[in-house]
Amino acid sequence: MVQLKPRFHSFEEYLAYDDGSDKLYELFNGKLIEVPPESGFNVELATYVLLQLAPLVGYQRVRGHGLELEVRGEPRNRFPALAVIREDHIALLKPRNTIRLTMPPPLLVVEIVSPGELQRNRDYVAKRTQYENLSIPNIGSLIRRSRPLRYSPCRVIATLRQRY
Image (cartoon, rainbow, N blue to C red; front, top):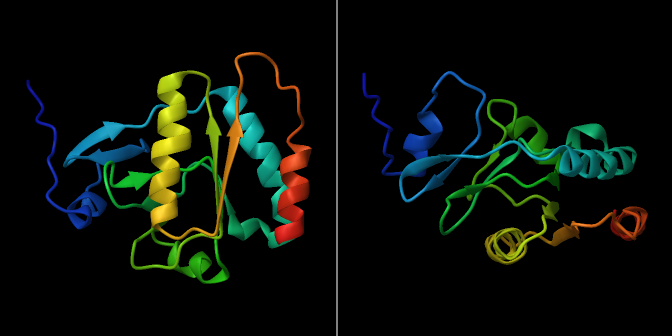
């Protein structure tokens, strides 16, 4: 049996869709593109930063990879590695962990830039442009190298502590 993939004409149609799974999708030109799972290294790094930020802003305001942001352009949504949300978002995100264009933007988003030119363009250029378009006040990128990290994420945390 051939299963037809749904096509969406609006972001609202996409939000109403439920395929019964826990998969994450980006909406690109009306089609769903499954977001692959993050690498263990990226999850470890994002979790480290999350654990450093939680005591500073409260655990409810630090969101990991499952936070969805509606953005302008294509794809229509992004899932940053990490975000610090506003106090008002806590209640607004109870039904669905999605920040819409009509809502205030998060205070911080962080992307982990994987090695490779394609990944760099996606993670550091395309996503950053979409986040800047939302007027997110703080956009961070942790650049992952193919070799072991020579720096510690502690420098990133020290900078963030000064801001929050």
